[in-house]
Image (cartoon, rainbow, N blue to C red; front, side, top):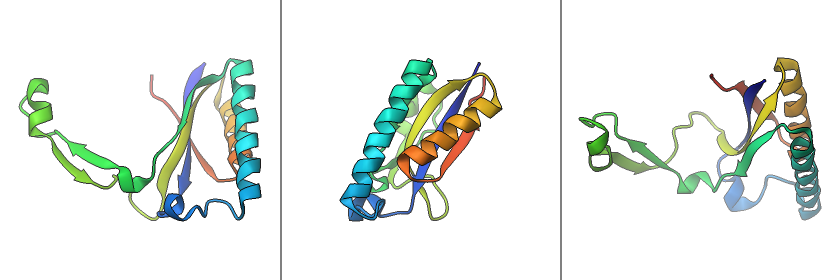
Length: 127
């Protein structure tokens, strides 16, 4: 069994405008589908974790790569507002699932996309 990261991406400003869905009814349907999807993953023993992210406007980039050791990382860290994402999309949420193979992970990703009504990205975790 391998673990996979399934991520949902949104255009910037989606959180602020509430425009991820065309209507409150569509958003309610997505919430219900995601709840059912999470329950299915849990029942299948495939659920490792999941979460929605706060808006990218609240993100911070923390860079302690120049620190002279882990004990000095927090004082040497440079912190700035923003994200590391490049391009026109920002990560909005994620699932970590366990699947027997890539085909099973693709099935979970397809079901996640249907549930949230958004395209998703699938990546296997190292290790």
